[in-house]
Length: 204
Image 1 (cartoon, rainbow, N blue to C red):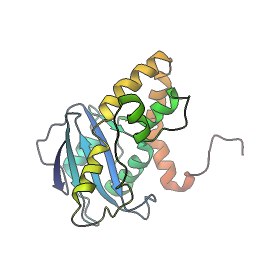
Image 2: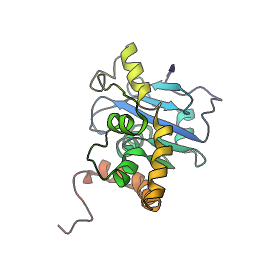
Image 3: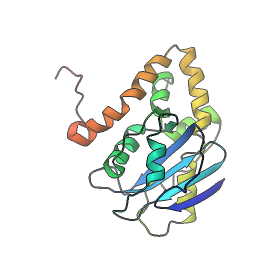
Image 4: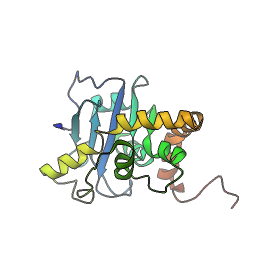
């Protein structure tokens, strides 16, 4: 895989096509406490672009324009978290969205294993490493292992989407996936406003 590391923003004029895979790395799992450190992107061509942020410096007009471009579909795995983090730190609402984790849960009802590593192994026959999942993403200089880990999280999302779309169509659940993806920005906002653990649709 080829990895391109950028500081603070994507370079002007970079064209990642109309479907781009996206992921993020943070200092932890609380968007209010744990800052955004890295955003990974891939056009599905084996090249990963990493945008590294210095602390409290999130002025990234090129990345922001891409994330909000209505003509570019953003592919995530567990979009709920990444969308919330980008709203919290970049002040934007990602749209439109596709989430491979939601798609997996809608069609792979024969298992409760919907992590990216599990889906890639079963559907694509690809093993990805998660060894760097818990590491210091706020470091000024990221290690080669961290860069490779970050890149691996987006390099397979295009292929996963193709296979999951086939399964969604076969099981006649494409419309459910589309409605869930449309709701993700609202779900992320609810998380940021304090309803992350409460099911507002529940009776109690």
